[in-house]
Image 1: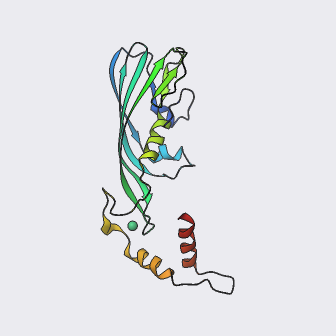
Image 2 (image 1 turned 180 degrees about the vertical axis):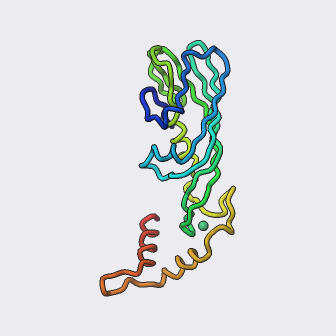
Length: 187
Ligand SMILES: [Zn+2]
């Protein structure tokens, strides 16, 4: 379950803050761009580049906030086959409910409870985790929305060839052997 966040965030992530307190009861729409700068804020993650848009519709009720969050765009990932980066399309739709001024503890994944004293919510962490959850386990050229022909044939060739190469006995290893070892580690 992606997290939402009440409290201080970095200046880059601050633009993903929605100040709900001053809003009228009813529907409000927000649009957020998600780009390389956003992903830099999560250096521990595997995504470094991306270009997405999050459309957020907030239905404000008197004691509850209802968020409908759609994320579309693409992120750069590495192809499992040829090891070259490519853009993978991402689509995510989520719904999130925040109850205001309620003491009860939430045991529902999509329900958050927040104190009456709060007035804003930052959804950057929610957006980031939602994008990560949308990534398929295998990513390769030819996966839906990408082109199989973009797989680098030279690189494919190299990986196939390397299977027959043994490490040299003089202590240094063929760099291609290292590629293979790294591949094995990943699997
Ligand atoms: Zn590829």
